[in-house]
Image (cartoon, rainbow, N blue to C red):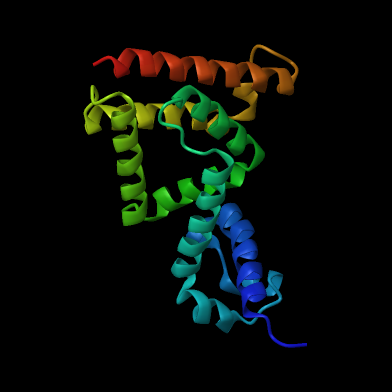
Length: 190
């Protein structure tokens, strides 16, 4: 059977997703990733250059998938907040990965900075030019924060007020959308 480099690369990215989300960049081991991926450890270095390169490639793939699942909608930020909330409930590992990245690295990637700048420009444009890029960035950060706060709160705290976790999560999602609406109304008029 011929060697399939694309399949090997995909298996490495999938194994890295699990390893990095569980252990972070510092705690992850290339030996475990290679073993789970049924690949040679040298394949990681051949395809990605380093463990950091593998982390970056895996994170880019997963953030791309998140963007597909919860597309950015600058003209409907409450809808985006709800979609992002749903996507993070379905795949909480992606938020853990970004948190590992923030904890273990001094800077965000240039791609992440540009992605946020572009989103802020899109929000400003959707406002008909009434918002500065800085105010649009404030709105973006608040909407993302609203969408991610539930996933970063301890389950015992999320359970307060309702014994049924499904009902409580739905109630909180509605609160996220309402709060995003309030943020857009309050800051979008300045």
